[in-house]
Amino acid sequence: MLKPHFEVNSLGHLVVGGADAVELAEEFGTPLYVMDEIRIRENYRKFRRAFTRRREEIHICYALKANSNSAVVKILQEEGAGADVSSENELRLSLEMGIPGNSMVFNGNFKSTEELELAIKNDVVINVDNLQELKVIDSLAEKLKTRARIGFRVNPDVRTPTHPYIATGLRESKFGFDMSSGQALAAYRAAEGMENVEVIGVHAHIGSQILDPSPFEEEAEKLMRFVGTLKEELGITLKFIDFGGGVGIPYRPGERELDIEEVAERMISKVEQIEEDKKLEKHALFFEPGRYIVGDAGVLLARVGYVKERPGMPVWISVDAGMNALLRPALYGAYHHIELANKMNHTNDTLTNIAGPLCESGDFLGKERMLPRAERGDLAVIFDVGAYGLAMSNQHTAKPRPAMVLVRNGKSEIIRERETFEDLTRLDRIPTWLR
Image (cartoon, rainbow, N blue to C red):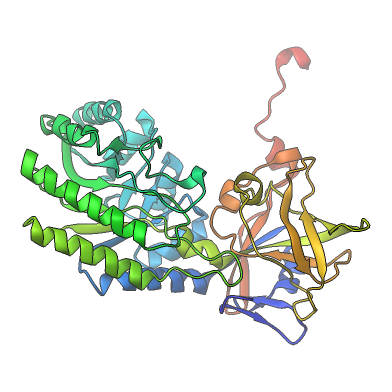
């Protein structure tokens, strides 16, 4: 079952963004990431519309960790997005693509001195993760003769139905200040006497790939009650509340899509109810979507090289992309739907395992999938790879990372060149004693 932004043409080929996937693979080679510009814009507008129709001051900060390709970031800059960054290079890239520093938030549990200085110089909001970091920020801001704009990342202890590796809002998580023990309140108290920081917000992120609206509503309630406590006990009035990201997408055929309108309704209603009950001023609300915007806008095309049959077992097909190009199946056991892009009208009648080319038993993209009987030269397509696909790719067994193309209404252009042998070795050095 294909999502509505895909088509199948008269040749039985998959069509992505108006472009024939088979022709793309022939022109640009494989493995190949393909990003659909129109779908990126549609997803961003859908997310933004859900919240802005219920609340005036909404800020959408695209999470670059999902996909930091320059063209992707430029598309979202054109749409008016800010940026959620978690490294110096994500910050610098956002600036280069035209996103102003005062439209960014900087997150993460380790920010180097150099990263913090760059953020302060560009008026980026820094969501502080620990008290040592707070002291470093205060010292740097004093040296720069300015005030750093900060929030604190708090941990609301919200349990989410997602993989443990991407559940970030639990008390045992490495992120943020614990709310229930009073640690988060103590962090705000510690910042009160600092002359070089301006405390303007609070931040939380409860996890990724969440397809249930209830955890988001719980997060909104816990954060808003904490905001009320800040005002009651410390007299602190915040300007913004940052709810992070985490909105998931359906990866499996038939999987229910999260209704973003319902998420917005439940979160905004909870925010406004507690603002009224606690007599709080209206806050600006920040959201940090990544996967929701770019996840289903990307596919990975991989060429079938060999087919191996064993009696009574699924057929193994080997393709030219593996955990080097798409790590999620090996790392998380994540499901990505797979078809043969050149046989979309054929019957899926063969139980198939899809293996990558690397020397690892864990190097597979999918197991026990029903596909048409594959042949050497067929083109596999792996769906929903626009987020955390290329971003998590690697050079295992000296495989070059794939190229990426952008498609729009049938037009296609390279937006990331395929790596070469020279790219793999250009940072290597031979020590003098081996020459």
